[in-house]
Every structure is written in structure tokens, then in C-alpha cells.
Length: 224
Image 1 (cartoon, rainbow, N blue to C red):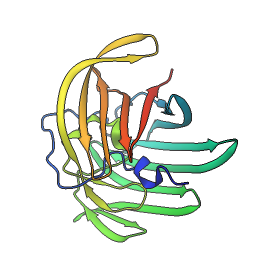
Image 2: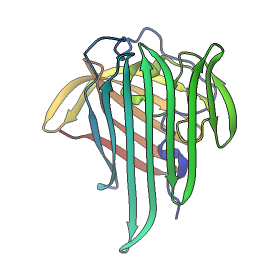
Image 3: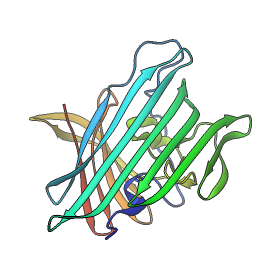
């Protein structure tokens, strides 16, 4: 049973797009010590936790590395109906992606992506072949970086294709993290298979999300 397939990781991948301008990037420049906060989300479906999405950061002499790890497992009547794992490393210098490596096991179907910044843009090799993304492109793992909401195209971190990003709306509101309500900004996004809402607090930290995928609702709840 493949309820989610690639749409889980393609949270921000879609059709023809228009970006949202004027947002600050949260990627530190080379040589700076400040890194984004590490993030861990519980992924819930119908109120039950089915997995986790973690993003961790470490500094390098040239900038930083963002590491993403996604794990999901769906059980029906004590039988595992679906498994998913995704691991990626992104090397950043300032607000530009320099290197991408990812591997994915989508319920037995394997994927690998390699990307490298070049003079022409980011050269990406994946299961669909080779593509060139804009030099300032983010990946679909990049929801930790609020600047993704001003991009018009993103790199699919699962298969390496370059796809459009549609941001429909931005507004203020409150989002519950733990037992506290935080003032936050949300963005509504849409793709051919997914609609969703992504939340950031006033320090540009990704704090939550909800997505509608093939009639299924998935909620991301920040832990810790």
C-alpha cells in the first residue's frame, strides 16, 4: 500500500510558480559561528505518529552542512504496509548551495541524487537524468530555510528533478509548540498532488506544517 510515495518528501515541489519576495535567508555566511537550530518533527497521520523528520547543522571552514533524515513506517493491523527513509547532506556557502548528496528508500524503490555548484548553476544528477538548477536554488529538504518561500524553482531532493514552487499566501497567526502559542508567519503552498501550510516563528525557525496529500493529512509537530 503506497499512501504517500514521493509526495512525502516533495512537500514543496510543484507546477508553475511565483515566489514570495523580501524574505531573509537563515543560512550563515562562511566563517560565522551562528547556525540554525537543529530541528526534529514528529510526523502524524490521523493523530498517530508514523515517523520523524530531523534536520541538523554543523559548521565548516567554508560555511555549513545541513543534514536531513526522514523515517516513516505505516502499520495496518500489525502489518507494516509502508516504509520510507531519506538521508541528505547539503553543503552551503552563505546563501548558496554548493553540494548535495541524498539517498532514499521509498518502500523498496531506491534513489540517489548528487548535485554540484558550477558556473552554469547547480548540476544535479538523479534517477531522471541530469538537470541544471538556478545558482540560488534550494531543495525540497529546505523548508528549514525560510528563504525557500521566495524561490520559483527547487531541486527535488529525492530524484534530482528541478521543479516549480507555488506560494499562494502569507499571513500572521499563532502556532502551538509544546504547550505554548507562538506568534508566527505561515505560508500556503500548492502542488499538483499536495497543498499545505508551513509555519515559521519570528526568528525564522521552521516550527510546524500540515499537508494534504491524496486525501491524507499529515501534520508536522516540532519536538523539544
